[in-house]
Length: 439
Image (cartoon, rainbow, N blue to C red; front, side, top):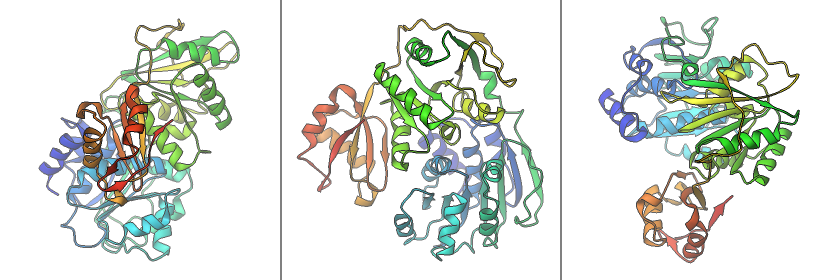
């Protein structure tokens, strides 16, 4: 792809009007060699490495040209949702655990140009002889440090041994790499270090101490959430059981909260993230599973209900807010007698009042359609259907998350119940769809 087309797509499809300094630097790299990109979380590195990846592509020729490996399904989906709209004439697919293997195999009936995948799932497809990576010329391993930490070394090595035609390799990391892995071809290496050059998210956030008078922090958390100005918030806890307990307490207190942890099914986690992003449940209670890979627009605050287990978890939790050039607040709830970790430094303290002139509220509801891309339904079809059959205006239709066999659509909360009834007998694109309100 030509750079001007990529930049145009970044502006029109991602809403980024101007590249930051790191993204500009990555747009200038040569398309041959190994580049290690060091950058803090929330700095826009997905767009940064997407630019040279897309520039390196040949005309579609029925062979896989580029691979992006990432250590979690959440990160795979985030990268996929950035690259796919930018790659105008190229087919991009995402492979990850928890996704239907059969549907992934079906997506290979027309060979993709770009594959975004977790190492294990990509290796699974290779072992089943469902893909040929002999023509791949570009490889990105995102969050390479995390991939090592999670034990993906063997899978990455076995995948890379199949990549015999590599010309461009990009390894991203939040920390300096000890060495280039031995399974990467011997090519010139250039380190691109933006850990200090990109404006640190820490400089755009306020770390606020909130003291709880009781050892059980729930009442203080509820008061804090009732005190905050309307926005999107993630509350981090350390265990699944705590996440369930906190989530239930917030719902009983009338707060619009969702739940996110590793014990949920994949579709439940994806739904929770979408309901946070579209404003249906603007509060998300999450374990550290949500500390990486979630890129929520306009996340106004992060709350640490429990202290993170280490400095790295602290950094990645906080990285969900103050992303790109935005600002954000980080609240840490403490109780008397707790040992505050050395890596937590407060800018100020705050005592919640339990009241706000503009409180956090759910402004949207989410309609679930049981049809999606595989049924040949597009976002345009859904918009037209809701206008023609549901009586909505275009401005009343919010985010649309279109999946293989389903779609989630944000609509005005006060109209959701009537919409479900009104749309029940109607067909969308001559297809009968079951439409329900997702809670």
